[in-house]
Image (cartoon, rainbow over all chains, first blue to last red):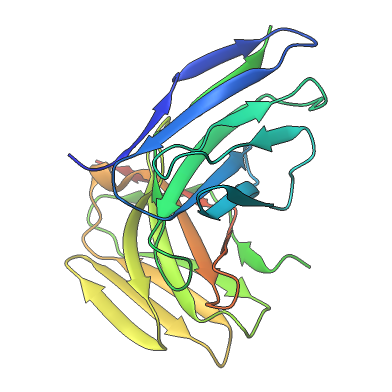
Length: 113
Length: 111
């Protein structure tokens, strides 16, 4: 079945450690997105990519990095510079940007040890 | 002022009730509007997508958009316990391609 796969489902980070969240899609979508979800705050955009080898910062990019080497993959690294990383991270994809709905994975919950 | 405002609830209704979920927005450039449903520990799933003012119906769900008032609604008829979830409105414009989400409204439908 076509969809978006995020892994792992749960992740724990030690102080000073970088961690990478995986996002893979087989929908043949050009655009991919990373969001952070905190209780009562909806979804906030971290980074997005419209095509391979190109990406743009969203509203809360500080402390995060991404790469887009393949169309189907858009990993997110939470660096040690992100001082409050505990959150639910959601990856999404859509057909070329514009009035297209985004389809989401089932998220990764990141916590600090 | 946030671009999109949504009452976070929680909203609790008896089974069979009609539910109304609402969002207001301030950016007149928004052209397309969506409603997502999110179950606990899951990603949001698209419920409704509309690109114009007026009503769009899909089974028990009706999405309503009033661009002149910058107001959108989602109505759920004959609500079921399985409708218990968080509902997120989202909207965007074709010139950016990004979506702006509301905070989400948590709904509980009691049997």
